Image (cartoon, helix red, strand yellow):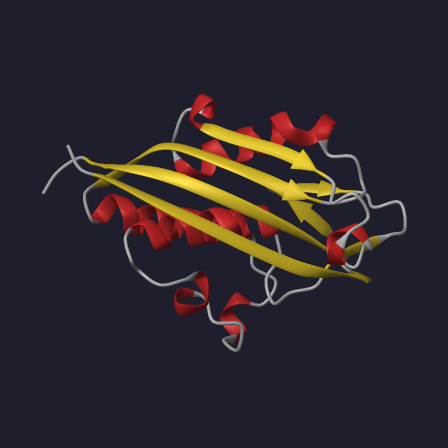
Amino acid sequence: MQFRIGNGYDIHRLVPGRALVLGGVRLSHPDDLGLDGHSDADVLAHAIMDALLGALSLGDIGKYFPPEDPQWKGSDSLKLLENVVALVVERGWRIVNIDSVVVAERPKLKPHIDQMRNNLSEHMGVSVDLVGVKATTNEALGPEGREEGISSHAVVLLERERI
């Protein structure tokens, strides 16, 4: 058996006039802020994509979905995630599990975690019990703690299905 581990990280600035999307769930920020980015700026999906790509040494999401390319403007990150999973599967690997965390002071994410897990598992074609999503604050430290942005970290384990 062959295994690969990948880790991913993403952070986006909170700005007015943008939707706040995490794990494919559109959330309401108490100050009507959303994440700035070329796509929908879903940091959770982006961190998972980078972890998947990193596990197979395929680069990062900027290689496949460059921000200067207008075709990706406003893209649904869950659709981009489907494309990344297809790259993994094409190369003969399967997802064993994913563990992730979103770092945000507000809004409270706990009520939305199950929907995020369901969205992610559906778009990756894996069982929801293989997708871990947690939320934490940064205890008022750093850009997340000052509510300047939201970040996410993800780790994935892949297993070789075929050579």
